[in-house]
Length: 462
Image (tube, rainbow, N blue to C red; front, side, top):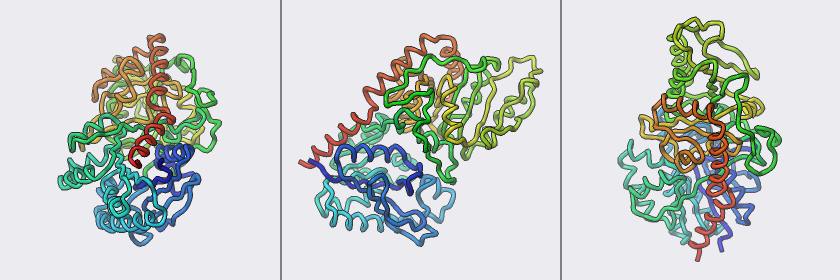
């Protein structure tokens, strides 16, 4: 039976309130609860020393002078290297330092399993120790590594070789699994992640999604903050959502990046009557300014005033037009409100007053898309019906017509049609909410996820 697992990754919380990779942190907490002894190997950030989080030792490896150690955390390494090419110089010392730190830990601690997330480059940090001490190696793919193959052809043979050296391969979605099998025909274990909700409270992941990549992350520190007033560990039995102030509220929460497809959500406003629908976009990101300009142009085209700024919760927000400016003969589009970053309390209120959660994701210009969409699982747990695009790993969560509505990517009319259906058909909403609860119970409970994961560990250790 497996007792000790060394988990390797590029990112792990640096302090208790740090909201980096909440799904991984939650996963390891559940493994620890199941009786496993867990340690983490992750890179330092600006000289950060090894420390402990949630009773789990986090071994930090140094790979550069402290002021230079910012290849990871707060933003993905590929994005950082794209904006600051000099950071690519740190890749080799990163791998070498991690490689020797892994050997040192394994020699002293003697783990039964090495579980490496994001196999490029972390498979190569793990391989030396795995071979030297004959420790089974598990590689865990999340999709981003496979995207690298499209941009950097030399990564393909390295990943293919690494997969062949592993004793087990995990994928966060069936979509990711299919990409792995296309690269090398091996057995792949579907290993999704569950919600980061605690006792039905608002998801930690949602808070991180609304933070800028370079800002300090804010954890939702009050576990009693429960959307829809739900408390306890069960999925909320929320009544069918009804329009707030006469409008059906469509909620998006996430980073403002291309693959989220927010531009198509904004375009969908053209097909939604303003007196019936409201679109609320929570979060910030590289595309925030561009998206606000798009919303302004939509307002201006329909004869309304430019975006008017206002403040909620002490933070800057913006909205499309005002009710007094409806002087166009054309039907005015749904109101679009950009909330910016929100406090935990304000974010909780967004979920509480929403009628539908939406993720209009796309395959972006780099070939990237949603690996799974944990935010959808969390919205389902909070009792919201889902409208999302049929791309990437989303269909693992949203079964069309059963646990949500799937639409083609980049199709604003299809998005608008789905929102209208939900607004007009309360029985459909009831059906989808029941399907969501069943889908979560079948596939996305932590007990089930951890049980399957430990079963693989034990099989490898025999």
